[in-house]
View 1: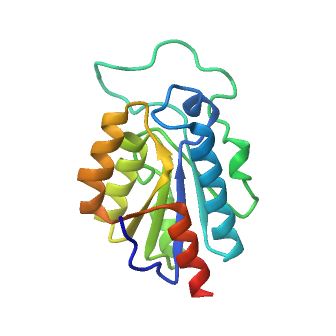
View 2: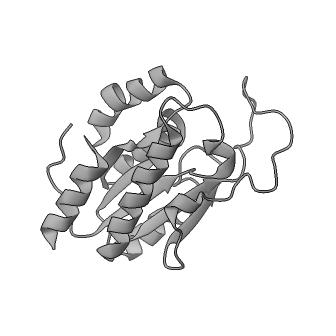
Length: 185
């Protein structure tokens, strides 16, 4: 894991760090993941860089073999307080795995002059990986904050981190990313 650079216009994208998702069983301590994500969001705000907070409202239409059953609680899509959401943060609500499909995310990032995205969230192998793939395919440099993400399945998380992410971008810790941000100032 190594991060070579943080572009001048980099945005942070935090995926599905919401009550209904983080309340599920995860492979890593969700408290630690949320703490790291909050630190990262704070650093981006301190450097006046865009912070994008993404939540999922439901699934994409279509037949699947696995779909969550039952009603979701009213607060299911609420972002976790550890993210310290600010009025200047850009919010994206999605109904698919990736944050770029049928949302204004790409347009927002382009309007901000963003060339790189740093991504974290839950779940590594679903929302984070899908968003990273879409960002890479959209021409953004991609950095993945490995300690600001987790999955419900440890094997799926490890597969994304070790096999998929190195083909989409660079992988690093929140500490490495924040150090790179601070070194630019």
